[in-house]
Every structure is written in C-alpha cells, then in structure tokens.
Length: 171
Image (tube, rainbow, N blue to C red; front, side, top):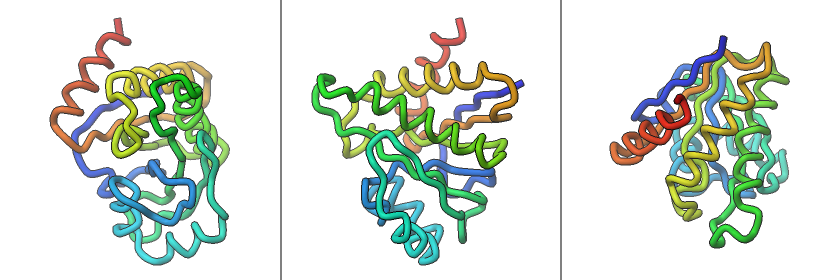
C-alpha cells in the first residue's frame, strides 16, 4: 500500500531513496530548489549532470545523491507558465509521472517532490498542486509501485495550501 505524506521543510535534508529536483533544462544548477540541491550534493552532482547533456521539459533523468542523505536525485524540468495555453498541464503531469516511473525502474521505494514549476517558472500554485496530487495519486493506484511519496513544501503558506488541496482529493 502506497502512502502520501505532506511536510514543510528542506528537501535536501531527507533520507529517502530519491529526491526530485525541479531543474532547468541544462541540469547544471540554478536558483530555488535546484540551486539548493546542487549546493548540498556537492561537485560530484554537477559533474554527473554535465554528462547527461540536459533534459527536455516534462522528462526526467536520475543521478547519484552524492553528499545528500538521499541516495539519488531525479531531475525533471517543469514548464514555464504561459497562461495555460502551451500544454503546461500535460508537461507538468509528465514531470511527476516520469519521475515516478524512473523511481520504479530503479526499484526505489521512497521519493520526495518539491512543488515543480511554482517558483520562478510562475505556474499558479493551486493549479500545479492539483496536477501534482492527481498525477501521483493515479500513478500509485498501480500495484507494486512506490511505498511512499513525500511532498515537501518549503514555505508555510505553500504547505498549508497544499494540505487543503490534498484534502479535497481524499474525499
């Protein structure tokens, strides 16, 4: 049976099989979650990411966790918000689905996600949260997938909003 947990905190401190990096297409680090993960993981992560030659929006790639408590980092590139008319919802759902599938392919049991595309990429938080929850919930209905998915929200307001949206999906 799979479990979904929502916490407020720093994704770089979690001891899970994999954390998901809301990366840019170069995979070479940036701001927000991406920068925090690269700083915490150390130079080995950047070196491995260089060898991956980037990642397309909606896709996912996996690397080691290096200095992180997590064994792996799954990098996914979320869409930049363009008002909802440029297939952003499909691309964002693909980020979650492809990250989960990569975790299953590597026999991982615990995975932590940030709120992908809601920072500098400008995706409206409530819409992005609904897509995240729906995609993960649907994926976990398949038998033999992930044991636990943790949504990690950095700020208190995002955490509270995400909990409320999640509650509407539980009913």
